[in-house]
Image (cartoon, rainbow, N blue to C red; front, side, top):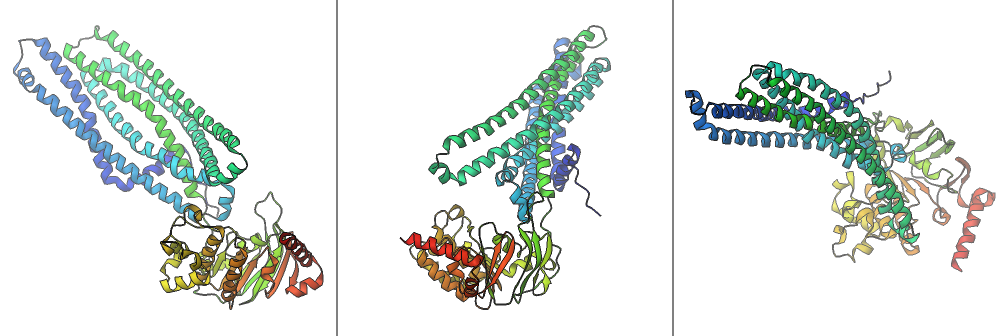
Length: 590
């Protein structure tokens, strides 16, 4: 039975946000109590104005109750505003505390989901736009969940209490308020749809700004060497201007809403003034009613404005929940093993990255026995790297099956499957941490220091860390920028050596090394590959001449297979590749 699609309507999104907030219901009760006290102080002030007017009107003919109030009225005012200030602080701080907790939880959920999403998701989505969800979108939720909710909660209570007091003073005068209020409510509802639509466009424009900025910051060397400054400035200016236009449309809508709300409210005020002289009402009651009505204007205006923040929060919440609801990597396997034997088989495997593209792999069948070293070669785009990416299930096959030790890899849990594989890829990934932390990364952090030093020596990392004052505790910088390409590659190889998995994947593992380093690393890899199943993706054919078997790929198919000497004697695709590379190497040495 298919899983029903999540509801991303405004009310559904807000209910989900409130469900997260409900975890902190004790604090929320305290906030509600403080907000109720704050709302009551406005009515208390209107009552004080009524009392002051009555005292002034009575002149020297005060009754005992009025004389008592006159004596204690100044203290009452100070007490009222003290209570108001304390209640405002408690409600604002409490709601802000809840909001930040909600933001922290949502940000954590989104980040956790990112880690669990399949590789194909990141192929199809810009990392800049994904980062924008963790920064800009979460900030909008914070605004909606803190300031907006405080205003909504306190001002709604204030309006209700003031209206109740106005009805108490004069029901006929209050009728004008009840006529105006539904009109304002309709205005707020109408503006809400516009606010949410603009907010979604603003979020998209912020994602575009983040994407462009990230690309330029990461590729700043290319920008400089190819003179791309003007082009990138123009591209950023276009995205920045689009964001400004979206923000101005939001501002214009908000300002227009304010003006309409004030105008509609003015009709209510005019009606009250028109009716005052035509009904039986005391001067004190008039003063109290007018004060309450004036105090009502502020909350009404703020409620119209706060709708923009709430709609921004709903639009941001929709963006966040879509990320949270994205389907994680399928991990339906139940088989857990400590260490595989290392037999690998690709059986009639086909794969396509997307439905609108042609197949990258076409009916591939390949068996790699325990302890065997198999090299996969071919021109760029032949499917070599894609083939090995299927083994740890970075992608799932379209048809066919991959086996490890006679079990389909879909039967293994993802963690158990990936524990059996070490990977050294052409694109080295290092984190902004120490050399030691990058080698003993993730599950390897529990491995002892002796094993770490052994891996460091085997990968010849010790040759360059000896020159560094902090040795293994040296920071590598963002993406390893403080190290050379060869140093980064050797750290990556040391990481694979430390893992000591039964299956080893080397995807252009020596591509970033100079000749001397490559010789050292190749010697270390030769030792590592002993008694391990090894798949080697290589562009430089000289590095795989000693492989047990070489598989040649072309256009997503295996076209030749055999040892180096046998393939040369066939005078086929491999021989042509070898001859071409031999000519290139000879040309480069001249």
